[in-house]
Amino acid sequence: MQTFAITKPVVTEKTYRLASSQNAYTFEVSTNVTKNQIKQAIEEIFSVTVVAVRTLMYQSRSKRVGKKRLLSQKTKKKRAVVTLKSGDSIDLFNLSSKEKSA
Image (tube, rainbow, N blue to C red):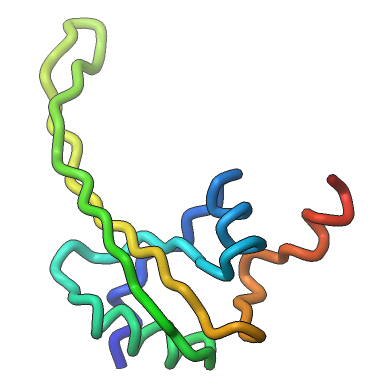
């Protein structure tokens, strides 16, 4: 249905910690989608039950690049932190192998 809403998963140390302790997974999403569309897309793609969706908007900003230090504009981003029902999990983050090696 809304599979285009989810761009990619965000995999960092903080998101691993959130996934293992609070059952919350972080994804980068399109800037124009709503929380309901994100919830429907996650439930359809991964066959899980979503309890809550939190979103973060990162505004565009200027950055100097190149030898002449020209001004370039970085695009704005939107991230969604999706909390799942207890017992559900997304195998994308592969938490069991990360916990064993730590």
